[in-house]
Image 1 (cartoon, helix red, strand yellow):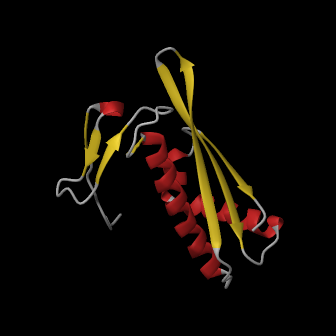
Image 2: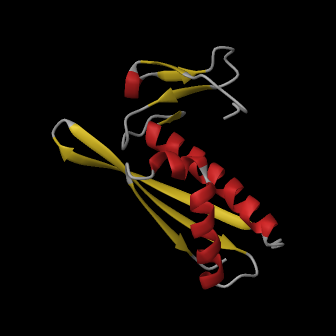
Image 3: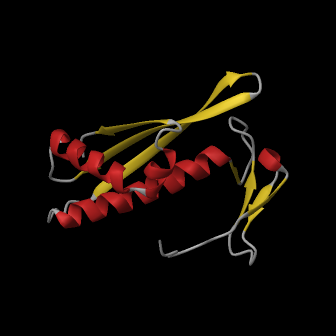
Length: 136
């Protein structure tokens, strides 16, 4: 396997701290989920952002392979669940649409993209991920 890219992010303060890249080209304040802190995000939002972007890129590859040009929109809703007082898991709901395609056609392409997306591969068998096509 050939490494194509690598990145590093450093956290201080956990869910009430900050994250940054070593060169400080990326810097964000972190807050716990559900807390409203100005100019801050949380790990679940970061995961949703990464997953939706990665999934949409995988969907673009699938569309290209089938000669489909309609623009795609993908959302990822990440939920945090408490299994017990000290054990937590994530769940993800992916929704996607493709201009010019029916919900059924879009669902088929989303399912294929789910087998291509590195985030989907990383989460397979670890957390519940649902995939649903919606109207464009």
